[in-house]
Length: 173
Image (cartoon, rainbow, N blue to C red; front, side, top):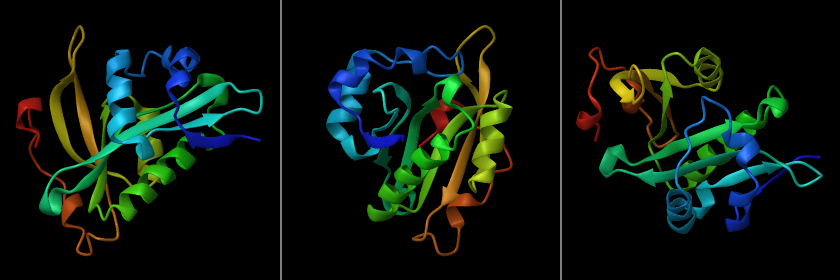
């Protein structure tokens, strides 16, 4: 049976199987530790009965006023554990934490080429709020979709009215 639990420091030595996916953004150890120190409730793992990390989600709460929101920094599931509903379960945890923090919405960024993830997020109720030009660096750079899902505090769903024009990374609040 899969266990969903808070991320621990020692997990950083055991999640390479998840991070080797080419669509997974990887960060330096200090970045993971910063998230673990500042937003530990937003950093969760899915662990197999044998102790293998199957996937994880890392996020935070940020913004001010009606822009107060939960943010998904990274969500990834190892290829051999996909299509089991783990990403959906991890997203539900992050959304629940964001509800408890009285956030207006949850947002995330996804490569425009990552059609599998975009489809999954849409099934979870996310919409494409805007396109962020050249968000991901590479050769060539790649655009991202800023996807959002309104939470219960956003009664009038103002946070999910899509923008009609793309923005640049430096224009993101």
